[in-house]
Amino acid sequence: MKNVLSNKILAWYDNHKRDLPWRSYQGFQDKIYKVLVSEFMLQQTQVKTVIPFFTNFIEVFPNFKKLSKAKLKKVYKLWQGLGYYSRAKNLLKTAKIVQSKYNGRLPADFEILKSFPGIGDYTASAIMAIAFNKDYIGIDGNVERFIARLFGYKNNKKKFKNSILLKLKEIKSKKNFSLFAQALMEMGALICIPQNPRCNICPVNKNCISFKKKDFNYKILKKKVNIKRYYLLYAKQKNKILFLKSKKKLLQDFVNLPLIEYKKNLFNIDFKKNYFFFEGKPKIINRDFVHNISNIKMLIKIVLFKRILKINDNQFYWIHFNKIDNSLLSNFSKKFIKLVRTENIKYV
Image 1 (cartoon, rainbow, N blue to C red):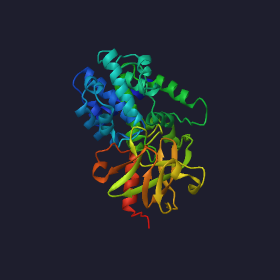
Image 2 (image 1 turned 90 degrees about the horizontal axis):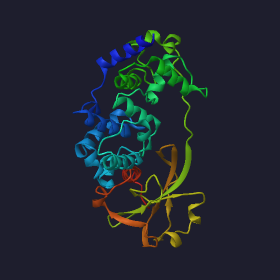
Image 3 (image 1 turned 135 degrees about the vertical axis):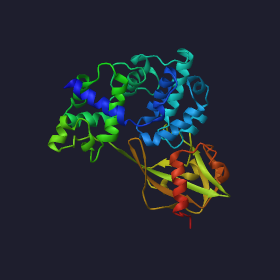
Image 4 (image 1 turned 120 degrees about the vertical axis):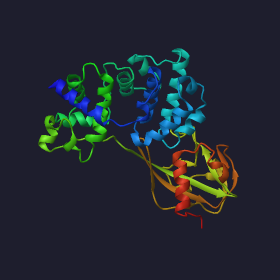
């Protein structure tokens, strides 16, 4: 049974695997580098989203040596739109370490990989299996879902993840670790999808407990979502928009619209003392706009200012409309500038 399952999965993968840019390489070192970059980009991001970013990134930074010499701002510009920018910073840090300490060659060592910035158990396991063909298994959401359904597991028990790992160890290929790891991910991505799995073309449907029971719900435990409330301060004058140098970890390397977390009424904030002098009264758009970053749900009220008279805090500064596109603008700021323009939100 063990060999039968792995052989069926590998045979299906051989015939149906996607033509992805990180699966096309010239030589062993090129493969390793592309696997590393792709694994960083694929963290919490879908394959179809990653493909164009990966292609552009590799054109500019084709190897560890080129990447290790890059400025963070240039890496960010190529990453812009992909989100979760800490991945870009960690990838750059990792490339610098690999180039300086390991002569541009990624070590085939699980513990050393885990010591690099941005690489945890899953990413290290995936790299060991896919890049180096070592006996490791990276369990992402796709793999977990596929195995849970195949063996009828429910994740309402503390030992759920351990049960998945143990079962994978039983059925895994005995030598094709790289192909098997990719085949499992592909099965989850293309066949055993979250809604309406494509059981009619699944190579292991006859062995699948969930298929036999027609029960595909294995109870994903949702992450706790933290709700935070903010005022977004929007000021525009003389073809310029007001921005703020953010101290928040998630946004600190980017150009951001001013954002203030609030626990009290806007009019109890002493703007003139702490931020800037302004003409008239701030106008609050009485609607919560939503923006999600990681597990944080941001509820944002837009506050419009008629005219800023004097800025007291050097964290605030103006950028001309013509220069905004050349600035390292956060996705958050892009979204809200577009929102204000398209919804014609004005101070009247």
